[in-house]
Length: 219
Length: 139
Image (tube, rainbow over all chains, first blue to last red; front, side, top):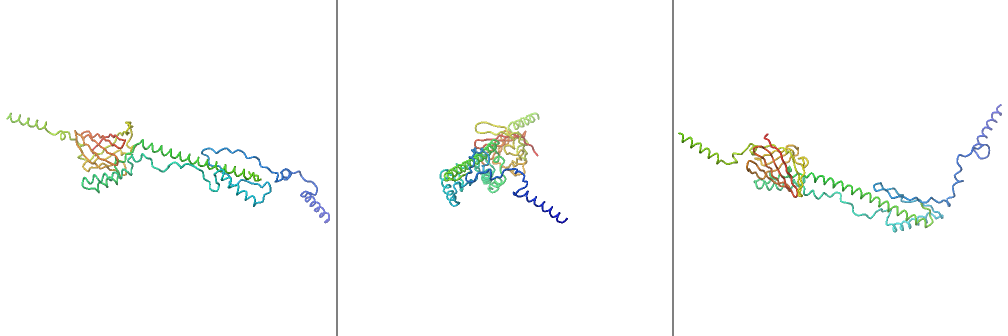
């Protein structure tokens, strides 16, 4: 009886081992073919051609370009040779495009002035000018009346009624000017970002061309 | 007796006719007491000749001011921020009290009808001007 049970257990164990291994027995068909059977060898791999990348829209954030494209030594170059080629292609691409990814700068005109006060403000008799001018005039008036200090205090410390008047149209013009400056600054920033992205794209193209010519597959 | 009465009436008539007109036209808004004036309309003008109707707050002018002719100053009553203007000159002409002064880059004139208390004011700047109208009252 004990031998019979041991024999049954042995047979069951053999069946399990037989299913797991390749030796024989039943083996279910694979859901997918083995990857090595369909993939070409690494040396014969050719990446798909690069797709055309349209320029980014005016106000979109700059696309993130990889500063180091994928490079494969198709001719079996050594890592040392690859680093040497990368360095030479880097210099060549910078020279050709004028864009250095290590120091990304683009030639742009100076930004529009944003913090300069509107020129009309000096004509409006603003609060500061009203206070200063009021102080001077108050001092003059006080001096005429025999008390320059009191007159200056009245004119400067509290601000005049008429001296602090502001033209409503001037305020509207100042608001419009501020809005226009903001729009100009936004446009300038977008233009700068676009120029930066364009320079980086040009550099990547030049670098890829150089590395491809040296026997690398670049993507 | 009748001659004396007639002579007295004649003298009174002569005195009445010869009295200074300013004394005869002096009203309660002559500046002897401080006044409170409310601005009712404001016009803003530019050098091209165009004027536009504004409000006092539009042009940063207080809506209510105190005019203290004896103290030679005007002050803002509607705002918590103290704003005062020193009156440089006071004139009386034809029943109007005329105040004037200068602040910053502007000169101003404020005229009050001594009888009715109506107020008119102008402030002139470089290429700009304001015309204000209002009504004064005795507090």
